[in-house]
Length: 523
Ligand SMILES: *Cc1c(COP(=O)(O)O)cnc(C)c1O
Image (cartoon, rainbow, N blue to C red):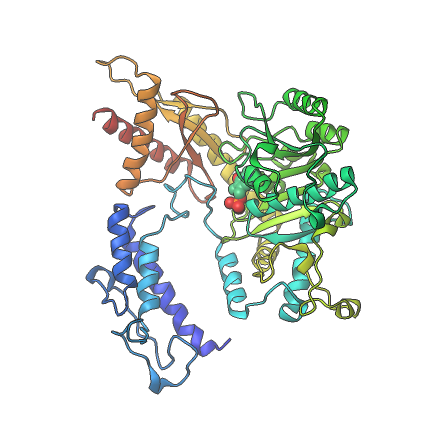
């Protein structure tokens, strides 16, 4: 990478980010979706003029242009677009600035809706190095060092999960892809064993017992989607009942497995969630493992959120039993402070990866592999693949497990403090104590003249107050629904992933929620 070309552009980016953030002035821009889309369209239009409010901090890059050309005499010039085929050297500044202005900023303490973390600067910087070097993980000769580094990182993460030597894994786009991979290997392994066929080659058998997947009723929707993609159908997923704490009820799992086997079906996989997306509830992993083993089913643990607990001595015991899983999903773009994407898929035994192995003459010919030029192609669903391992490896070494664990603990403390503030507030109702770094709650409207609001009205006010906060650019809080039927299930959610946020800021955020609730109630 030509430092001369990249350096001035980085200055442009950093200046434009600062200008956009200043203009936003909050966790999300106070703008309607239509107005924002119109402004983006103006900025994206060929030859767009910088709008007055966007024209702050504009820097003209020096003698080097934005592209490959190093000829200072051939600056393409602004004012021409696709129609004339011309370029626009200001596009980087203009679009970066509007992107920063129009972003939901996970580094803002009032942006606390989703499993959407503020990335660590060191991880962003490492990711920039990856963009500049552009290794691709599908063959050794496109990524010599990154191939070796990903292999070492996977070994280390397998150790973190408690896997013995002989584990394997790969970096993924996230929990969705990791869950698909876990269930694909489950299908090939368990259905293959039951039918004596290589299902990945011959396809699903038209006869024989119906394969079923058991996951809690609040498991991530990617489980159903994976079942659909694997040809099993979404209805292959048996929803297992949860308790009030939204953890899978092991008695219900035992009963569903027994009923399924009684119907002559094939219990193919149990998916245990270690940290549900909404509340961080952790299914009873040892019981799930015992029951899966008793029925010959694959155990996949979806630890996309809760896997971060493994970094913390305080919270790691919550995941006891995760090492019993046949496969695990982790997401370091959640409790790991990485830029998207930083998904990890692990299997306990490398042999179970067999059905995914691929030989492509142009990527990993056998004689190259025999000569030591091994590639990771056969570990991934993807071919061209970004070196997402690099930023994770850099982060792990820069902060250490202990440093990362302190960030996890800080977010856990914040959630405990936030939940205590909710409990202390007469107009707020807590759902359950936080397990990890998130909790559900709601605003309770109590217009004294109207008497206590009914469940449908409480739902309306909570949904509306959240949109009001978005519209006013004041806060981004989550909104979800508890499982079940009928009104009264809408809940607000705080997902706390910013370790620098203070408990006082969370208290003020909750006050802001109450103010918005009162404003909606009055409508
Ligand atoms: C976020 C999440 C997923 C999906 O992961 P992506 O990285 O968004 O693909 C799956 N399962 C759980 C429990 C999650 O929290």
